[in-house]
Image 1 (cartoon, one colour):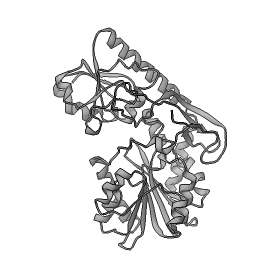
Image 2 (cartoon, rainbow, N blue to C red; image 1 turned 180 degrees about the vertical axis):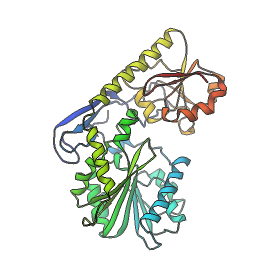
Image 3 (cartoon, helix red, strand yellow; image 1 turned 180 degrees about the horizontal axis):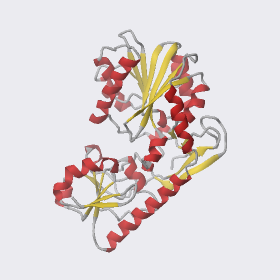
Image 4 (tube, rainbow, N blue to C red; image 1 turned 45 degrees about the vertical axis):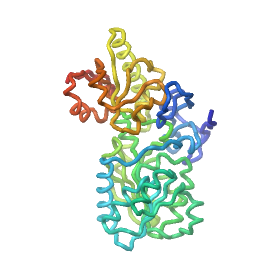
Length: 402
């Protein structure tokens, strides 16, 4: 079994006292989709904790990145490409970009944001991403991408001191364990008035929208503006603007600058004021327990009636739910997903097969459990012709007739 370590101090401030937000028990990695049933599956403790000093919410299990992302398969979807087009327009407009602007993005994936900037006449860009297979896809689009992890050592080796006008990161920050070296590298690489602009899933939205199944090993940190300020200020980076963006069930776009004399916008303080109501997450924890228990009870009742259930949506969050102690692996016949990458594979526990949605017509269940419940309306619209009742699992179990 791959080794792991338990976090003994906060990655941001170094303090050692934590509150437990929620303990999921020992579960497999959410990004794991084995090819064989009952394959030997490694499980790891998943406990979400909150630093009592700086408020950063984080996982307590430290798993080597090569283990976490060894079978990395995420490529930007069409929906996300639309977002990156919007992001590029926003950058050109608000940051007054010109063809001479020097830009670097780390965690760039196959380069959808860099490609969008290139289309808008911004060609002086470079990307950094450790996923070799994904980087090759970006290079085929004539993008300059380095196959590596971004951190201070890389920046120094590349002699990037005071090089970039902008450094970007989108949906990357939460996956990086060595955030201190990354932020140190950001400060080192920015020009004196350069800016670090990043998007990250927002803890307040995660709690409000009850997106607890986004909490898994691969998501190491869950940020607020309150927890980001001390982390960035350690390296003389100042947050001057924040705004909400409607991706990943609620994220924030943060603008930080190396020029600490630059004034911040008033709405930064607005976010800080809102976050005062999210210091105590005990009610959120209780709600998770009740919701998982209720779903388990409802599925058990359906099984007692000799009825069948199939799942819709084989995502990382589905792997979290189907791996908890509340789950009986015999509750689902199968799960369908629209990504062909996952066909003929199994959920991370090696128990539930994943198929093309066409199987719903060939071997229809009595109920469809919508595990991708944030897309419930879209899934129902696509499948209502089947006449199969739906189960929406969260925030509370709900049955819907087509």
